Image 1 (cartoon, protein in one colour):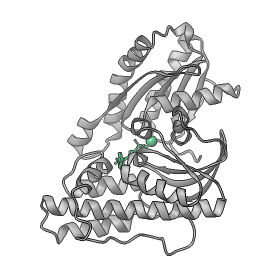
Image 2: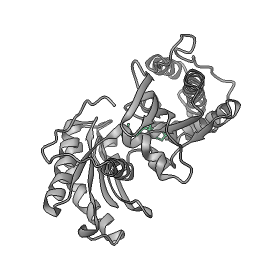
Image 3: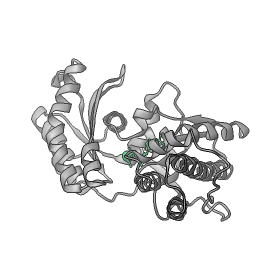
Image 4: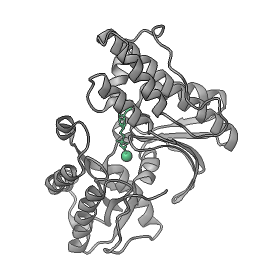
Length: 331
Ligand code: KG4
Ligand code: ZN
């Protein structure tokens, strides 16, 4: 079964073709970095217009590269939420128009389910049930994944997502997007003895997170520092350690609580090398296993949407061409 996947939940335009026999046949991504840099963040209206410009060429490219005729496709999967209303509208309209023209079924994919399932595109994959730490620019949550479409929320951020805290702290220190990746680079040169940042909410029971206080702590530390390269590296180091430590503590607690033996990390922040190393050490002590997608499948992409759509089609599901998009859509 070959599926075309289309992702437009925020400011990444992604297209990919997944084949159930051969895996990902082709994928393309356009990240609106130029727009982000120019306006200091995502401007929803501009992002939507950019998706309009990018979608047709990207889809053409993936069809050509995979040598896929439209007759070879089983159907079209698209992100229907959560995300920016305009961006979702553009992607879903485009995807459903193709499905209509090609007389193929279409399926509305939940962006977070696509992130959770991205790991299934790797050789080393988990079996249900498993624990997932989903950490992206928009979400920080711990989930128990029992099956396709069956997820239980165990804890989430009460304020900023981890990626958002990375991005805002990076911007404060004059670093560009993606902030998490920039902070990770600068952290490599940081002196571990210079600063120690708090680990938010670890002394409270439960599996919720809070990162906005940490962001304020970084702000105050930066304001009173020399604001030079050394300060940037040292603060990046202390900030990354605090976020990673907090995530590791909560994952450990969730493994203890659920008794699950597999931990999956997903979303853009799961690309973080330090987080991967620290979680790998932690799961070993629990006789558990860690699973993660390659970095390009952690951040937003069309392949994870094609795969999530495939799993839905496999269950005999599809959606009518009139299916609504859902900017707010609990998993
Ligand atoms: O999953 P994603 O592409 O978009 C959302 O659905 O939100 O995640 C983007 C987030 C950004 O906040 C970015 O700073 C973060 O992922 N990120 C990282 C790294 N690469 C991207 N955070 C930490 N370390 C990285 N290497
Ligand atoms: Zn995402």
